[in-house]
Length: 461
Image (tube, rainbow, N blue to C red; front, top):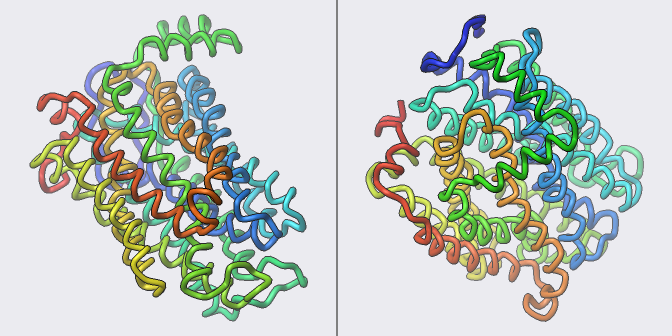
């Protein structure tokens, strides 16, 4: 257990933390990502179980990007101005978000109508976003510059590990007698989905409490200056003034990353919205739950396995990325892995065999590892530390705005451009990731900035 009790100023270099201290401070992220994994693999099938039209599914996913756009910058700004000797700065938000998330996870699989599931989706995403943004800022708070790469790599590992475990639940639960088709109360959502969400609700709370219990936070470097800024930025008007100033002073590198993030994050929601539906339709001959109930359940199960493979690829590559970037440069590394992910999506057009979807998702998982870590490492080393939380929240806007555009526009292209076929939506995601790879070279970087972004040596230590 981490026991350091820091009561002095940390305006000098922050002390180096051990591997297990960084593990403990990141462990709560595992629970949050378990929740995200359940959402990503199961929400589209849940909507279809509740008779949602396939073309309207992207609109039902609007909860995620809109709550992210609103909640993360606000929570970032508030947490930047929060300090309690007992509770710290970020930890109160970890706990509040975990409680909201757990509540939604317990209720979601008991939804009796589409409106109920859609409403709980908004609550779930609000809780996840309240917790996730402070975890990103936590790295900048706790770690000195030469350990931040390891900190973000650790978070990428927990993203992959947490989501993989969530995705494997349809294969783990049948060991305990929970089948694909049986429902405990005659409802339309299978038991294996329900118990996966119940376990997720417990996991989120348990993991976040572990981080809160084992990890202390540093006090502000200059308490007098902190109190002054807190008073100047207090209230809603002060918070929005701070957001406006941060947008005005946005680092150049952050602006240049916009097109990379746009293509990437228009593409990725297509995967969460349509992967399981594409597998059910093409590999199990089940276009919906009514036409072929068993095939649709098997397609959902295989979709979860494909997401697990995707996340294994993510946490496998996450600790190798710094070494690769040291050899070929940050832009080239990110472009390479986005290209691999794009080809993974396009490969799914080659066959109706379920294994082609697993192969393609393994390649996309490698891209996912790069997407989750590399931009954040660069950002953490290019923004002022006193604005770490608010910039992490604003940078999330580069993720959620493309998703909102996706959610609103896909309905209009699903028939004319994509032929009402979820697999064609995955092919479009592949093309967009290749565009994102090309956009990497619009970011003007020097070798010095690349070295600052990836301070880890080849061994990852």
